[in-house]
Length: 311
Image (cartoon, rainbow, N blue to C red):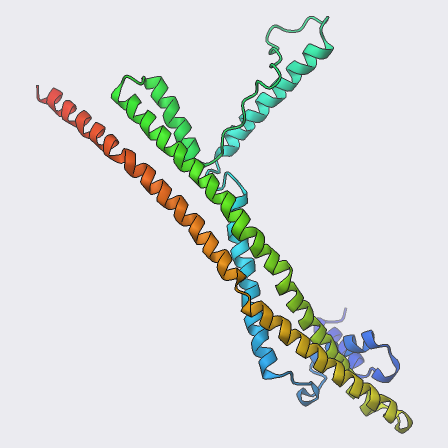
């Protein structure tokens, strides 16, 4: 079996020996690109693109990476339960209830005259199923505190305080859902649109420049190896390829500048920060409004405990 080095050497030699004068344009570009990759083309024979173009390429690459990186993280706001992963247990419980209700409905409609086991649940009345509770961490804490308050008793100091905390966390949870709604509408959606429209157009224009550059260098290579009678024909092809490369480069430069000068990403970022600011300030204000009462209840309970122990 041939080693990889031998296979690579054989492939490199084959590519280097290809005559570009008798093959179609697409294949010429492929061969030219492969020759460059294997080091079979003198660097001086590779057309140098303008410095302005290469500088814009680097900046657009950075902008493209920025959009992809931010989207990868902020898309979490499209998922209600991102801060409460253990909600999967609740979801499975709700699924069980849904299956049970579905079976009850089937039995009620199709097995009226069949004697069923006594533990088959009765069908739920239409519209009686309550909506699923929000799957956020603040809402989960609110539900747990509310359940605890009812179990302990609202007349008890702990129960009353738990109820106060529950109401506060429900407001915080509602504010978080509102934040997510705003972020999806004013940041995620336009941010994704910029990536898939103007940035994508600029990237496509750059691909066209690369293709045009390969066509030019392939044409020049073909002209070098062509017989004298065909030199004029290939000279015209080179001139045509040069004009095409200039046109494609100018188009790409214009599109890349338009992307980099577009103020919308900054506005989108401002929208993101504003939504976060409203949420965190609402959460802070809500918790601050109940923290004093909870602290007073804790201090009173501590004082009573110490007094009891002292007696």
